[in-house]
Image (tube, rainbow, N blue to C red):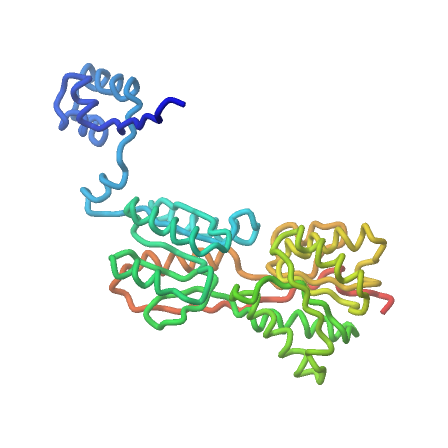
Length: 339
């Protein structure tokens, strides 16, 4: 196998030599083309095209004294919840002519750390991060190096780091209270790893609501660990059907609920007459399913916009901690007319 060759990035000096002009002339063509004669401008533009030159945006921002790139690391950009949060971030940043770089950590701390390094190398102004754990020592180190940090969809464990989150304990409790009001006394909770803050908080809310209603959570709740996607919902329901008992299923997010609904229908289980189903996030498809899904709505776009607001305030502004309240949206998947 021949050795791999590494091609040096074309520089503005390369373009200048190729076009037979000064570096300053190339800079003017890129930034102030009206100052360059048409013939010279055409020659420089031809050199740029022939050499496939791409300007170094980070260096240009540093020279201008204004960094306009911001990074965001979410758990999984393929999840519609995080897609909508990211759109909220993007809309807010675009209003101030900022550019957004987005990455998925896939809940992997090492992957998160890799993207943090990459963003730092690209000279971002700051990062908005859905942390993979409650430990944020690595994010504090990033901030010490002059890069802004905002925790996204996660309350901050320290006062000095701004955060935007949703009260997921209350969200889990309101979904459970709704199912209890519908006459269900034994509930299955399809949940992710407890190391994920959202999963732990929603479980806490479920247990609180059961206890407040006079039920022993250890008896009334069947927690089934699943992956946080539709495949996880399918696997969770298959486990549930092997050991029947609960008449209601609460899913930690709407993707899990999608897989659960699909498998229940394929198994001949009527939703909601045989089993009630509730999701979490209220993503766009929740209302469009064959059986519209009851779900706990999070203010997805506003979550992203508010995080971007905090990021753009600058490092001298005092830290702020924003907590949104979720809302239960009741649809057909949990409201049986025969129960």
